[in-house]
Amino acid sequence: MFVFRWRAMGTEFAVHLPEGDARTAESIAGMLREETQRLEHQLSLYLPDSDLCFLNAHAHQHPVRVEPELFQLLQTCKSLYALTEGVFDPTVTPLMRLWGFVDKQFRVPTHEAVEETLPRVGMELVLLEPEGRWVYYALPGVELSFGAIGKGWAIAQCVRLLRSLGVGSALIDSGGSTLYALGAPPDAEGWQFRMPDGSEALLRDAAVGVSGDAEQYFEVEGVRYGHIIDPRTGYPAPSRPPVAVIGDDPVLCDALSTAIYIEPPLAKIARTRCKSVSVSTAIDGCSK
Image (tube, rainbow, N blue to C red; front, side, top):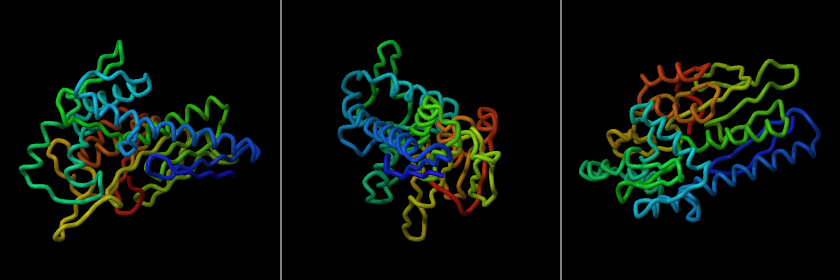
């Protein structure tokens, strides 16, 4: 088993390759590393020269044309926003800044500050023109980020790359928050994955998305505030055990795990949209 690890998109990616020789495995891992780093320069909120930062800085002034891949991601975000009735919302970024989860200067804002920020939140404020791939923000202060879908998007691109290279068995993981099990290891029916509740799942051609606030949170006067913010209220979602969603599409699993964490009844959507789904809520386990 060949295992390679690298940093990208604020986390540690890893790929497990059970077959082939060392040189081939290293070459495959190198291509995956380059792909995730390319996507980081496109989607990062923290790299000033990223495509996303350019979009956030200019799209409220005039329409910005983006490349097809990024436009497709924005269309996917629009669809998931509608599907979850606004619970999954990449425009939650101004609220993330308000609570200090972007600059890591954590603070509890006033109710007035939250109310003043909420009008700048909502994917209906991001206007998409498909023919020219133009993006326009309806108001100044609208800001996108892809923390709830970006790793799933990166995993999906890595899986496409692996398949194009003829790789039949691999496990690609982004820090435990989103992963994809391609095929199965030799002499096994699938890849073993430990769910947040401690149970074991056997994965084959399946993705997992996990969301929780076990790592990114702060406390003030005994009250815990997690980084997963409900875009409808402007406040962090109530702290609860992590949520894991298993399905065919890492993008969908990534986004829906966050939405379900905020609004648990949305699990019914996951069960209808993913061919094979498991929603786990347990105290220990992985978290975004």
